[in-house]
Length: 392
Ligand SMILES: *Cc1c(COP(=O)(O)O)cnc(C)c1O
Image 1: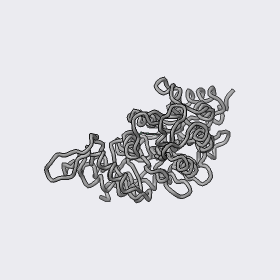
Image 2: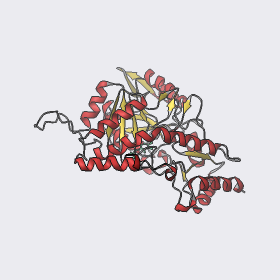
Image 3: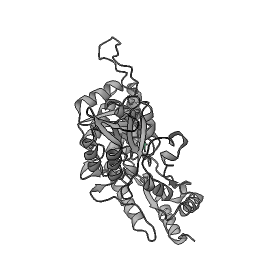
Image 4: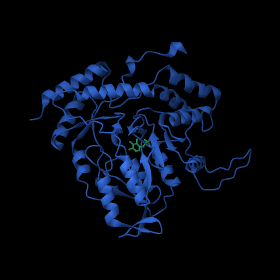
């Protein structure tokens, strides 16, 4: 009943690219060579493996240069990066933060860490990102301005921020989202965890909002083992993020004084060493991922999601659109049964028991997409890369 011929061609294409000898073909494995090893060994030999060390600054500078951001602040992971971004834009207990239900659970979790609550807005089909029309309708119908703040009329709670996510590396219509946020005095924070290397109208994702946040978890485009990074053009927000990620310790030669209760969220040097080596490979990773995505898009009988107008996706995870939930499940069975790791999207947040009672708009696109998308193997082919170790 399903298009088994197209599926067989697809799996053969994947097997040919990644090679069948390695057992299960993973969704997205990291790629290292002698360079990563050398820099990690360097941190060990220097003894600077922890939160003081030159690689942290070097990695921050590399990400700032690549994205064009004025500042970058490296942290322990993307989740705590989102927490810290919300902290520096002033999220307080009982606030509301607008976000999407079609996301990884870290997005609403970071909001919850502030004793604030998410409000789920629908996404749009063509970008998978927060739908500007749905956002605008919610703000116009349910909020009013009080003393320069956006207040949710029914509950009296302040909507202080909006945190859209660039789903699977496809940029949201972030310029329109920014305009709507500005009209309503809502701070924009971008969950750019999946979108390092993705541009919208030529500008890197994460640069439209007050703060953008990347993740360098093992399954992302580049990895530091665990890691995250805030980017911002705002001097004060950057200084505040750095201060709050280092226990709010006042800089002094020997005294321990802290002016806020804040956590240790700084990225360790040993992780940043990986990041420095990975940033050097990022352009080639992105080129290979784009090439691989285009090859998926050329296969017959399949609907692959593509970057939309005005945007350049990093193609972090390639997405196949099935005709129904039943077809999706059949394809998941078929492909995983043949040792090819494919995965559905996340269960939408409003369907999880922990977030089912949150405020939300109608979410038809969220539910429609979550039932139909399957992510296909998308990592770079590491073993085909030349061994660089002999060149030092
Ligand atoms: C990966 C991811 C995060 C969290 O990153 P970690 O580094 O794993 O904490 C947050 N949001 C989204 C959308 C992600 O995909």
